[in-house]
Image (cartoon, rainbow, N blue to C red; front, top):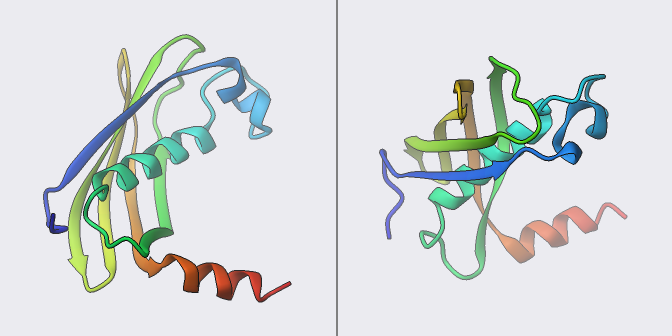
Length: 128
């Protein structure tokens, strides 16, 4: 399958205590943590590209700009949606949205770059 503008995917999760700002260290309250929302959004972007890459390829996130618009309590379902808005060579840009059962909780943009998995790992671990 070809990566094209409009390609989309959604992923969801149930907010658990371990997904709260208090638990992940990003705040003092038992509400859905921004880092967890960011990870869910990135997961939706990865899901959108599932089946589009060669066997030796993956994507890595290089840019993420999000707004967390509304708090979500433990026990609610959260869904993230990623839609491809641009493909420029190996760079894929996404529009992101996140919702809980009461409405929109987040939005933003994200960029991922197609890389060779082994070459990327070799370069990364050469830092040791």
